[in-house]
Length: 205
Image (cartoon, rainbow, N blue to C red):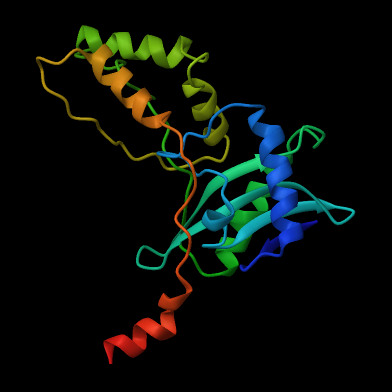
C-alpha cells in the first residue's frame, strides 16, 4: 500500500525507517553531500512516501519540493532486504502520480554523474579517461547502473558541467569530488521550533 506521510512523524514510524536504513547501509557511512542521509531531524523537514505491508514499512523515500519551479524530487531512498524485486519502481511510479495530483509540473530524478563524458569525437584524452571511470568504476560508485535505472523512466536529460582548470589533473579533480561526496555526516541540525512560519510572519510585521 502506497502512502505519503506528513511530519511530524511518530517515534514508531521513525524507528521503522531507522531499522530499514541501518539494514540498507550495512555498516557503510552516509554520503551526506550529494545525497540525502538518514537523520530524524532531517526527515522531519518534509513528506515521506512509503510502501507498507501489514502496517510495516517496506520502502520509503523523502520528498523535496520547489514551489517556485513547481517541481518535486526524491531525496533519501531506502528499502528492506526482504522487499520484492521492483519495489522502488512501484514507489517511484506512485510518487510520480502523487506529484501530478499535487499539480507539480516536473519531477526531478537527480543527476547521472559522468554520463556521456568523453563520448564526443573532440573530447580530450582525460575526458575519455573519465568515461572509463563511468563504465568500470562500480566499486566506487555505480555511475552506469544509476544512469540505466533512471533512464527507464524516459526522462528529459539536461546537461550539467564541471569546470576545472586546463592545468588541473582530471584524476585529482575526480578524487576531490569523491572525497567531498563521501565525507559523511554526523547529524542534521535540529529544527528550531521558535521559528515556525507563523513566528516568522509575526517578526516580519
